[in-house]
Length: 98
Image 1 (cartoon, rainbow, N blue to C red):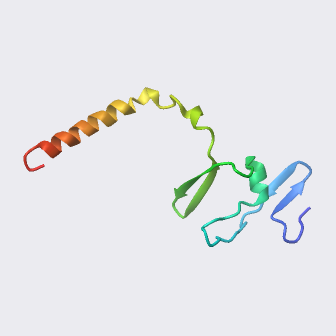
Image 2: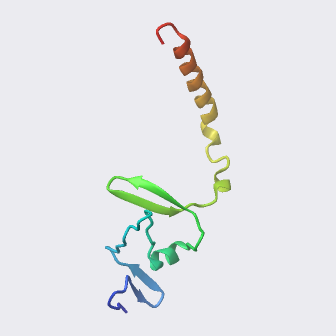
């Protein structure tokens, strides 16, 4: 069933969000996420979202639990790489003409 002014089509348990949903940017830079999208993502008032800048637009995703990322990059030794980069920068700054 598609109603005039409706942002989505619903048939039994199938919901298709139509392309071209639009909203207006408020005076404080706020945008309302359409209800069908909030429902699909399980977003509720007060939930945090992440804004990801992409060529030609912005993607909005639920923020997720930061604790779930703990240790996710441990295999990459990023702390050691960062420390080595910092030491090289300090050496370059202290070198004559650096």
